[in-house]
Image (cartoon, rainbow, N blue to C red; front, side, top):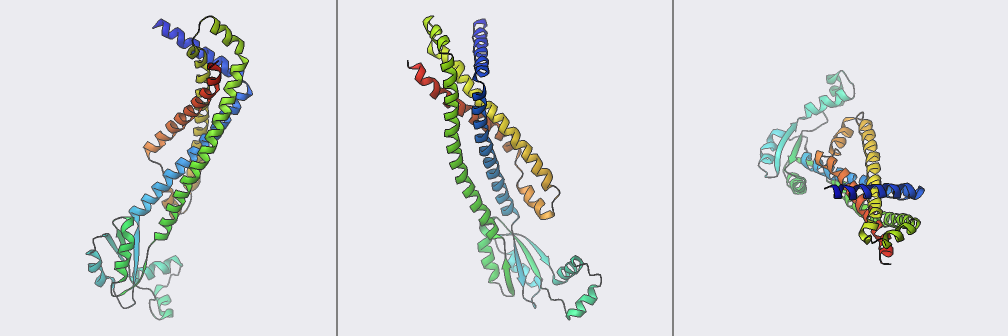
Amino acid sequence: MLKFLTKLDYLLKETFLGLLRGGWMNWAAVSTVTVLLFLFGMSLQTSWQLEQLLNQFGSQLEVSVYLDGGTRAESIEPLVAKMPEVTAIQIITKEEAWTKLVKDLRISDIQGATQQLGENPLVDELKVKARDSEAVPNLATQLAKLQGVDVVQYVDEAVKRVAQLHRGLNWITVTITIILTLTAIAVTTTTIRLIVMARRQEIEIMQLVGATTAWIYLPFILQGITFGLVGGAIAWSFISVIQQFLHQLLAKQPEFIQFITNGLKLTTGQILLLPLILLSFGAAVGLMGSLFAVRRFAKR
């Protein structure tokens, strides 16, 4: 146990001294990894949020069915209720819709407004909730065929747009991540290589006294991993600050924006998983960069 602690103490001290000797090149490596992980983390978080939004649209998707002027909702409701895709039905009579519209227009005399138009110009409406988003197009087609139905509307186009945005973001994320990962590995490799060259004389002395290659170069590998971990921690802190700012900003927005905001909330598991992914990814980038750096020297 004492021998292990002695070795661990040596490795930690050598790693720390190597970081101190790296100077500004350390910050070049850390900042590059930070930019990589920040963009990757933001893209990953946005991807999760879009998935949440799609699920929210799917779970709350409604089809609005507007009837002909002479058709009442009560006559259509039994037929709609028999459809297997339907989970709930809400009837909005033309009287209720007219009353709400007049109040929204801030007109106090409802009867006077109705008399000026001659009659209530609105029609009965059914809000039909589908079983899931995939069932909506087929349900809308069936509803449109019912006698007395004038118009059927649903937000299928909005869902398609969000899905297209999600797919496009995934491709952009993959492309940017690959480019920045290669850049971060190259910068880390260069940094570690410079540190190794600066300590070449010490390494030669260690080789003469019989130190193994793994023992000599392990501190440099730990330095690379440290670059990745520090970059991941900084990136996660930036993402957290931005997330809090956006949450406070959207909390003061209208009801529709609140609906979208609720769909963009991450689950507890995703909130805990994001920093772990960033730290792990950063450590992997640092490890690869340091391995590339010491491989050439280790072969000599």
